Length: 432
Image (cartoon, rainbow, N blue to C red; front, side):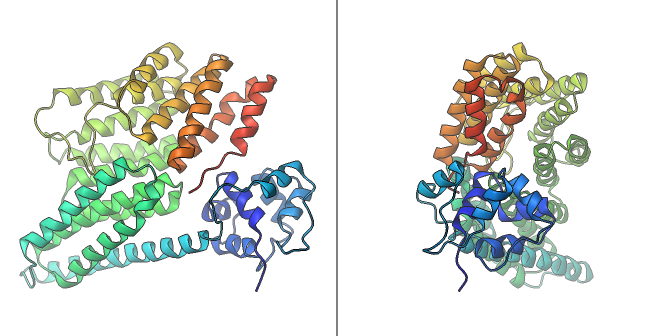
């Protein structure tokens, strides 16, 4: 049996890469990364320089990472690798990752099966619009009720990835119902439940920085919602998909998705807050593009959520009630280089009751604002607070935002405290 390369896996995770994301950056198959880390194969010579660059190590350090971990393995010479060897991240079994990968693959396979069943159901129902099998109404209501409960748990959970097992079981229930049910009314109800759960699945993947998997979930969610003729649910799926592009700084593509979402939501329920949430996200995209006027218009449209009456969201796939507008304004103004407006909005947001992920995002924005102002004390205070929260919640999303600070602090690196912070961020990791 091949010997493990634990230090290689540690370094990958320290640099914020999943096996899949590292493979995408290198242009290799995802399974290659797992084989390298299990000691079953070696990176080809032409891949090694890029691998070293991504892992932020020298070629010598990379060679040391690639030593199989047997009793007579050489002691690493690099101080970084010595520290990594002596102090592995607490409680993390990096080869439990193999089990995680198995669960993820099974989950994605189940997603694909459910998506395929929806296509079959659509074709059969279009050909024969008679109700063949209709489960009791209570069964369908139970699926929807469970979906709502799962969203509540997701919102309260510090570790989003811990929800995979229960979400997987709910997906199995929907898949089973799809196999046993036909007919227009039942089909739409089940497609709506599937679209809802696909979005939740995407959120779990998104929080873990598995953007390719999240995108697959959001795409399935949009398709299921379209078939169910649930326009608000459909628009929300596209809006969540747009966040992936914004995390990759592809604001133009995100803006096109959000424009489509706005077009779709016009056919939805005007009493729901969906269109205002889409506007709030559009504002972030416009801010990323540097378009202050378009951003301001979108924020103004988002503010109109306060004019709605009654039940304006469902607490599940739609949770926008305007309470997060302060942090969204702050994020926009940081991106636009408007520090005074940004600080007012972000401090207002920080004084509100926020989820862990949202609080982490606000802390990162305040740290970035400190860097813009060259206020090193503010930068350090909020960056350290964000890292402390990320360690507690294990949020991949917050970790990714923290890593984004390296670009902001580059002009301040001559200061020894900033240089130390950048090193800490580069080596920052949490137990997933």
